[in-house]
Amino acid sequence: MLTLLHHPLCPHSRYVRLILNEYGTEVRLVEERFWERRREFMELNPASTVPVLMKDGEPPIVGAVPIAEYLDETRSGGDGLFPEGAGRRAEVRRLVAWFNDKFHLEVSGPLTTERIFKRYMTAEQGGGPPETDAIRAARHNIRYHIAYIGWLVQTRDWLAGERLTFADLAAAAHLSAVDYLGDVPWNDDEAAKNWYARVKSRPSFRPLLTDVLSGVPAAKTYANLDF
Image 1 (cartoon, rainbow, N blue to C red):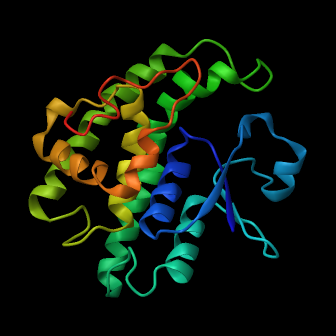
Image 2: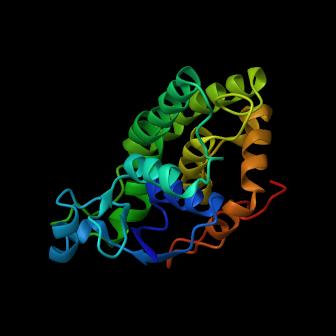
């Protein structure tokens, strides 16, 4: 069986969990407080970041993108989350990078760090009161990302084209972490909201909606499919 070292509110971990669920792959989830930099964990991943996927007898697979491509190659059964054609695959990769890199840097990373992870960190680990300027900037930045999602899905069936791909799961994973905190301005764009509702209603998403962090309750609309 595969083992995934993850954190429930880490957007990159959520991305991998959605892929595993879409492929119907059984996995053992192990929560990793990556900021603690455990020696055993850093032996697997010196960067001390999640997610990390492990399989007995094989080297660890580190990072959301390598894990996603590994799962596509080994678990998709020929009907994966990459479309056919080099150009279409390039567009999927572009959008995955948009959300895993740009959206994370500007929105989901600051919000999860300031509002969640810093609660559990010591001062030496970077913990302390949340930086209100970082939170304010992230809440401002998310509005143009929501508008971009809305524009994409008004010109395509899904973010990267006519079918669900890694791009949709990456976007939904990052948005779900922010949605847990109640910081997504869904009323800004009806098209983006409707797209997210479609992804959120998929069976692969249901396990994420049961995530609960001690001391950080989910927003009231988080697990509601009719939000």
